[in-house]
Structure formats: structure tokens, C-alpha cells
Image 1 (cartoon, helix red, strand yellow):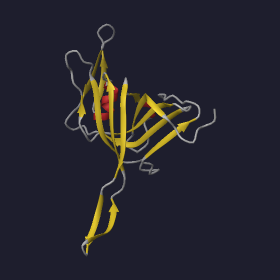
Image 2 (cartoon, one colour):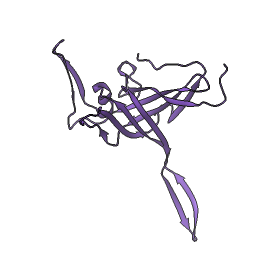
Image 3 (spheres, helix red, strand yellow):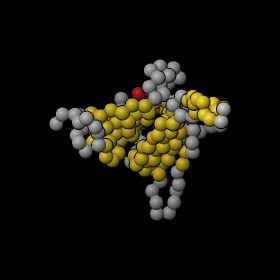
Image 4 (tube, helix red, strand yellow):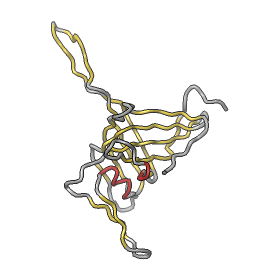
Amino acid sequence: MPLANHALPFGLRQVKLTPYLPDGTLDAANAVFLPAARTFSFAEAEEFEELQGDDRTVASHGAGPTVDWELEGGGISLAAYRIFAGGTVTSTGSTPAAVRTHVKKTSDSRPYFQVEGRAISDNGGDFHAVVHRCKADGDLEGELANGSFFLTQASGKGYGNETTEVLYEFKHNETPVPLVLS
């Protein structure tokens, strides 16, 4: 079936988080999947300042677009949480006494990362949404509750790739392209 003129994205199949290195390039070797991805929502936003005078609005100027995003996944991956929050993940011991620990220090700042979400398209292929240079500037949330699964939640802004200036992109593929880790 040829690629349709429009995509009909349905569901959420995968969410991949890829951290940025200090030089602004993607650290593909440390990319991780958000486990049991439930939602990846986004909205383009821009703050505007208006010039008002003579009892009317004369002009409006934007400060540049950003993307407000939110993610939710089931369970918790310490590697994914490190991408949101910063800090370090260490592993000690061996089976059956292995331990993985995430430590966040007061001196650890939240890093930049890229989010890519993938959905099937009901009219063929799949649909990818990519938000570049994200930072979790909202709450990082989770709740341990009786009778409930832990859900990891994060929100923030995407500021765009500093080199290419790409803020976000949508890709509609004729042939489905699963997200892979390097």
C-alpha cells in the first residue's frame, strides 16, 4: 500500500529517551526505552508580547517556539529516570543479590534529552513524533499505592536542536520502523 497523504496514528507502541552529550550531540549508546509507555503528549507553545497603543493592539512578537511535553510509563526504569532527573545509576552484587541504585545529589542538574514516540498508523505504516533537546522542568512523579502499579510521570519543555534548530518533527513511514537502541 503506498504512503497515504495523512497518517492515522493509533496507540503508543514505544517511547525512546536519548540523552545529549555536553557537546550537544545525541548519546545514542545510552538511549533507553520508557517501560510500558502509556502517554506521550506535546503541544507547541510560544510566549508573545503585545505592543498596545492608541487604544488598540499595534503589534505582537513571539519569543520563539518551545514544546510542552508530558510522559507517563508503567513501572520504573532507573536508567530512564536518570535521563529525566540527572544523577547516577550503579549496579552492585550479582544474582541472586544484585542491586541497582539511582542517586541524585543536590549538585546534579537535570540534563537535556530527546524523546521519540512511535504509534501505528491505521492507514498503513507507522508514525513517529520526535521532540528535540527536552528538559524535565516540571515535576517528576511516581506513587507507591496499595493495589496500584507505580507510574513514572515527567513533564517539561523541548527547546530544539541547537545545531539544526529543529524543534520537533513528525515522520509517517510507509513501512513500520520500530525504535531501536544502539
